[in-house]
Length: 398
Ligand code: PMP
Image 1 (cartoon, rainbow, N blue to C red):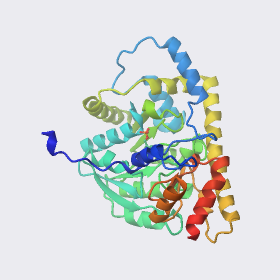
Image 2 (tube, rainbow, N blue to C red):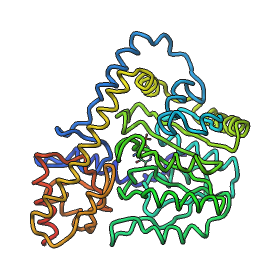
Image 3 (cartoon, helix red, strand yellow):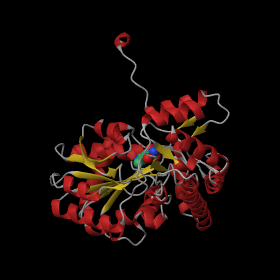
């Protein structure tokens, strides 16, 4: 039966990762894969995570099963982190939540839930969006439609075109938005734009579906949740998928959360039961370790404080790298404006160079970025900045 199977093309980012590993160029630089890196180019375990793990080693008393929704405490702490402890949806109990295997698990379970609600509902995604959104949502059978989002000429959000295109959405369609740190563009909605999109959802009966994989890496933990909280203030229903991969550095521990906000507590409980049923039939229940670390940190004042300080240091490093990159490119005297990089958020921005120029960076300098020219700014550091800027300017001048 298997002899007729053909090999599928490799995922472009995972392929890039492998090519980088095999490259023997001593100057090679990986700006492709989407993980945070420190000044030494490592993706270390956060100190607060280490502390929580040490505590768990002593206090954890069983490895018995948890539940399809994960633990009560993890879900509670994540609700508080994402919505704010005093938010009205928490007070009114209008929310169901589940601990999931990473943000990917949350997105896929959201898609399964949407299919179960109404198989005719489409999910509208930004152009461009994170490449894995398409298989994660499409794999559940959801119809995907696209709205224009990033303007490659102006290097910012083409907001008017986005709103105009969403006029074609039908009541009951879901609108996938990036809560902060848009991947791949780094271009986020500002507060007025969030307000306008909220009004559009209310007027047209669209249900927001917010993917927030980078809370705390843009402007701050509360600032980055502005859109989620505003929409939850105003609209009766929404979905929110979050990830602890980046802000807790828990990538391989597969830790995420899916929230369903509903019109009242009874509807939320019913929606939750549908979701838990989907989870049971997919992976039964989520892995425990990452979520146990998160709930330990968020439940302890000292560890929480330490985690927030570590997260702030990561955020500030990214912001200062963005600034330094723009300064150094400008200092070369090249006749091209890269100042948009400083205005964008999170780890990613498009350099706006051609696929040929991307290939030249790889071939001639061992600099690995994604074909679309998405660059992981966090992969740079003080030592490698000049090497990168010189290579970029060299390639642009050819
Ligand atoms: N959404 C977006 C936009 C992402 O960039 C990522 C991670 N790259 C995820 C979701 C999922 O993250 P994970 O499954 O690793 O938690």
